[in-house]
Image (tube, rainbow, N blue to C red; front, side, top):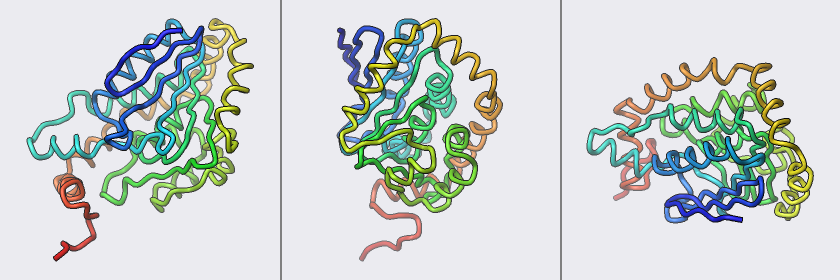
Length: 260
């Protein structure tokens, strides 16, 4: 068993299983460029050494999407993220098609880009506190990079509904829609039961299977460039950036009037 230190993650290797926890409690477990870089590095190690990757968050929040503070700082200083949307899309693509079984273990809130991690995973296990939402349209942006993965998992209309309503749905609804594969109040026990079976599968068999499945459905590769292009458009719109800056600085949504 080995433990590796990172700034945004807690990582533990146990035999052929890699346990990765998103660990940014001070930032509501949001996604910043450092998290993308660190998680990509871990996943690349898993491509070589692990047959199962378990991705989890904090008990109260799995992942709440993009770090608006980072977006705010970039907008204020006129700088763009060093990696851009490509790096995050590629990370999700690795989870979806890599030579390992990826499991999202979800507790608490999952929003926006957090749904990307869920939808990209081979298996999604959750407890009874899990909720799922896409809030992007509230700020004039679009979950462009999330949607290819979510549509692949849950279907066009369910992804369409989540995007338009921006409202969280409980785990029971997410399970009925196919976003969650299985859930129990005590999800640690559920995860343990799955790992007892999955750890018996050979790395070679998993690799061949995942490669074949990627060939059966090439939608994620095909939709990568359109998704990235739309993401760049909505996150370079000055009005959208102004709304994000205002939300970070004043806690006001774009339609809310200034408080007196």
